[in-house]
Image 1: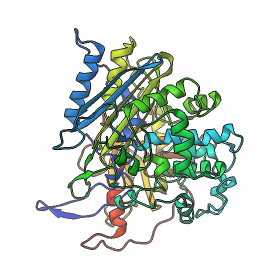
Image 2 (image 1 turned 180 degrees about the vertical axis):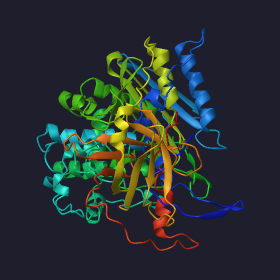
Image 3 (image 1 turned 45 degrees about the horizontal axis):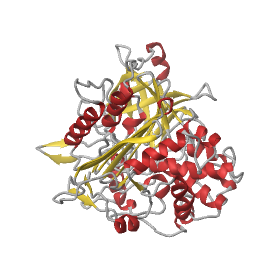
Image 4 (image 1 turned 90 degrees about the horizontal axis):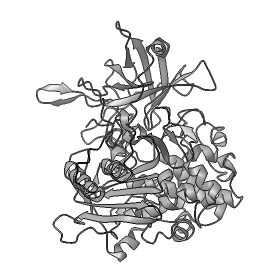
Length: 554
């Protein structure tokens, strides 16, 4: 599997008798703390899940699902897993697999808790919508109505972001929440969100709010603070009392201490991307009340499908039917492929003729996937205690086994080659950490495209990265980020809907570039050479993507 890489550094490293230049947009943190970027792609375009799942007779649906889970666990190295399936008003399948920790004899069961990563965003979105229902939040109001002290590098930028922009990932806010593994742990007090906001004065938006979809954990940190300010209740208590309790989610919490006291939890296993060291994390291994709204909840597979059922049936005692519909609506195109959109904390797509809602999540040691099909009153959740991995294929296997959709998965359309000459030119913008990125899109002799990164952050002077752009589908292109001859990342060209003279290139959760380059894309001062122990900046760029895995490049 390819490694999704983010805005990062290039450096020369001596090894094996020759100079090796690591990925210019270095890999790593985004696979471990958030949804895998593959889940930003349609199933048939290299995203997760089987396009066709062979269900060999005479397997029953439950036997087929069991086989899918066991096979995927084995393929991805999961030690323990859990699956729950809801259909027609009840949980019809709930199963644990494997053991809670390596060397232990306690089996995973239906009540075993896992971290769920960015699936947490649905709960934060619901907390905001609860305040919309109460008349205390206006989705189209600037967030400064609720967070008056927010100041960014551009004095006018904060006031141009709406609450809707946060919930739909259209704010332009960079995904800079985790620039180092050390940031995964953090403050644990009710002032955490307010204190974090005061530290944002140097943040520059990557694009004007409302311009394009670009996933960012920071959006949901801010959304959590909006809910806290509007309700007058600290975020942690707000979630426990007004979301989890009202939804009847008795096994869902944000507090490691509650998980430990309950005693039925998994230990997480993952590999440190910096040194390949195998790591083990218990529930208490890290906690961070700043990042909590973006992805720090614990839950069970059963609680997750109960949550999906609540949304399908009008919001229960948590939110109004109108708010439940809004969360699941096609609010914002993700600019990848027709019928692949974002709601409020929820992705929506077509899978074999079905209208599917879904979101994945990951933390160092755990991965989760929640999927539901409202028209069939169906939901499935899968959880596993290894990262970076989620049992996404098992979730779609369950769709095939239980619902048996007859439609074939539609292949994504290819790009329109007549558009490609219009993609050429000089681009500039910002990476997640605020550094300038500049590039030039060129035409090849055969009519295909290539890109030259003329100003790689912390790159070796005089050695620009040049890579062919291979069309994957529509306006999304695969490229080689590390010079090894293999495509390992994606970039999408997005025409500006409000300014016909501007064109954007987005590498989701990484850099965002435009032509013409925005005024903020000014060259950065030369970076100091890294020391033997590694500078703080280099450490951040090495770890930048530990929140997502890459799509397989077709």
